Image (tube, rainbow, N blue to C red):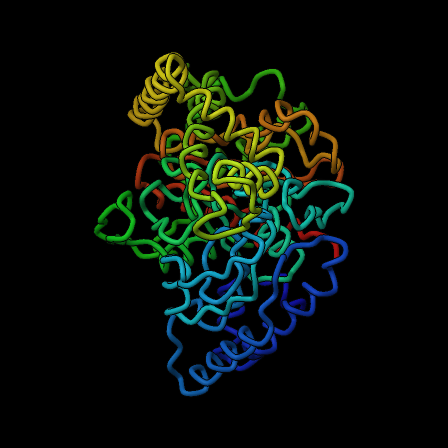
Length: 486
């Protein structure tokens, strides 16, 4: 049995049955990460000693019959924009290359309290700005299905780690599809919870009204388990919502979809969608119908503006959030002739090309004379997009679309064409703009590369999204069905 094809639940059950130890699984992941580093580059930092110490502590709890939770002893990768006390947190940017996190992010802290083992920090696009993991100051990650191709982004390193077996699961962040898109391209599960369900405290911010800490896993059940540990109100995050946690995961999932109404938006099946990807996704939708779901055609008329809205609001928030990286308080400092010159040198040398581009775009859109024409108008259309979804959910329980319009493309293919790269987010940004829960699950292969199916739901109805994905996965294959070759 290849234990690195198993999901989180199976591995934790193996701990209880003493089939393997947390130390053995942790060492297997670390060894795999080191072996694959030159090819796939999933990690920017491994914490071998600390990980093995945490694994030994978990083994002691299992030996005493007192595991802390369903994730006790399970080794996880953590995206490099999430703070882990004592580990580097560079957000894949030269301006933070030597920064050590002084505390845990809330999501990390809750997983630590539940006994999870942290393997190290995974690679990403710089400050989460990109769809390929090529903007990282540490160098690009590569897709384990074909190392000449991108793994997606910005959480590409986390997706690679889970797909190649160097982590059982991983954390990422999703601002416009940064968990769902790489999950689709690497043949695994990426779940973005409802905005406000998981605290953003300790996440290095890119766009605060869009960012969401999110799990990348081998199965839907694993995603549900990690959500259950991380979710809940956090007074340190003003956007964290006090929720009454009434539902139990994953015990409440149903293998039948009888009575479920699924919306199919016409606007998501238009030109630009690869015909083979569309065929694969439509076959998956037929399978959902076979499980008892009712498929209804719906319209989301403002979808065509979602990408434009996202690429105005996001750079504006980037401009504000990254103003703190000035070379004075922390991070890289390049001294100049005066204060302004120090700012200019520190930021000019510390930020990469894509980050500088988005800061400039956001600063322009927020500037006097342009605020009303760009940012204010984008916020109004954002409300129209959210209203479209609200009306659709009067008639359906969830919405199904492709995750990405194509399979993974070649490294470097779109690096010099930012607009082409931005268009890869066309199906994922709407969930962030509207704050909705959304998941990508593997649904097939095209020319040997994975294709993702996206499921979106109502605000805080994460259960329906996960439950629909679970039913599909249970009927048509779970972990390892589309396992990346190793």
